[in-house]
Amino acid sequence: MTRTTPTNIDDYIAGFPKDIQPLLRKMRSTIIKAAPKAEEVISYGMPAFKQDRILVWFAGFKHHIGFYPGASGIATFKKELSTYKSAKGSVQFPFGKPLPLALVREIVRFRVRESLDKMRKRHFGRADPDPTDA
View 1 (cartoon, helix red, strand yellow):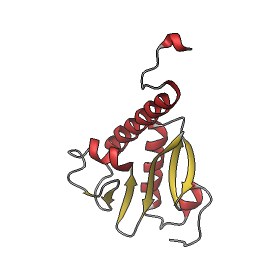
View 2 (cartoon, helix red, strand yellow; view 1 turned 30 degrees about the vertical axis):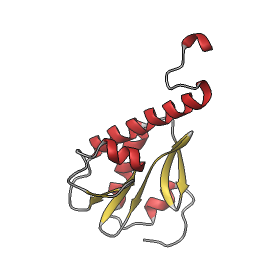
View 3 (cartoon, helix red, strand yellow; view 1 turned 135 degrees about the horizontal axis):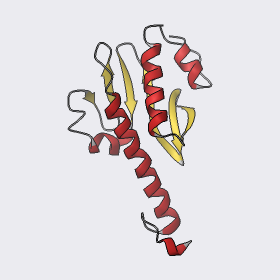
């Protein structure tokens, strides 16, 4: 892995060993499909996806891929994530086990809905705006 700060996700992935790069690309493409309107950014030196706010981050490490959907993402999918090492806002997907891409997709979609709800509450004072407000 290179130790320079990447400026984009392609550079980030390129800094990893060839056998890890496909896993990082799978994470990226899964997140893109689940949040097609999200913008790719580097935040805290990690790939992140932003739609009004950061939805999720992911990162490669020596023995795992870290996925960071925030505390709400971990709490909401606690049962589904129970076989993985996790903390309040993160989970580790170890190398040697298949990536749970369907679960990643569900979590990202949840984070998109959560972000949209928060944005609506800021603008309309409630999560579900009345169409007559427009």
